[in-house]
Length: 284
Image 1 (cartoon, rainbow, N blue to C red):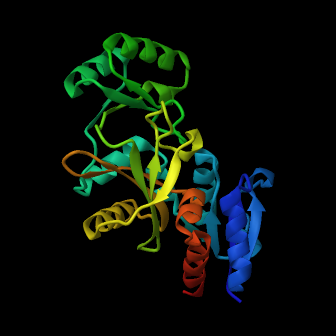
Image 2: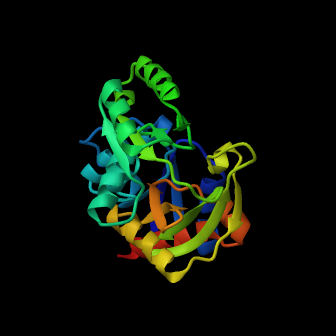
Image 3: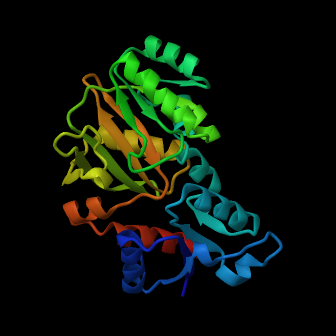
């Protein structure tokens, strides 16, 4: 029987479904709570955990450094350290997608408040402030006047974290009150949904009350999602797309994709798709 180990730091709906799917598929999926681990590079981690790991940590840095340790010990990690590093950082993601020639929103980066103001003036209001590392729409702000921009920048820099002084500023895309989440597993689109923003909210994240509905992708949009996943080396990822008036843009790629909304709204067993892919990798 082939096997793998799933690392997590919180058992969410997705991780529980992955465990159920593994049992259904007859695949041995060991689980390990990352919070209880203490690791060092001289440990024989492949003897303890096997040769294949599915990394499902919510914490970006916990999952990132865990992946580095596991790969150093010779384990194959899904998603890899490189993919997690790129996708967990909005600037690195944007640069990677830009280099791959994919359509993305215009953005600028500044390292001081003064430079950020100049970047906003060049991009043109409204803009969106995003932390370079973060999820679920936290600390994401739409800015539609310069006084608000200056106030936000002052508060952001007062937080004292060096990452908060890297100002990632993205053009605001005039789009329907929704985005598209595409779940890609092993180079295949397995599910796609619209995520609608709740009343009075411009962010579409399910974490802030967004509503999920099935979405049938045109072939060219499906190809765009696959190209985005390939650009970052993603094996199991969520690609987030936005519909501008002119074209569909790639916004972000999520390396520890939440797929509850996609599964429940489409009826597709995404967890089973993931486990079948992991099982195929384990055979190689």
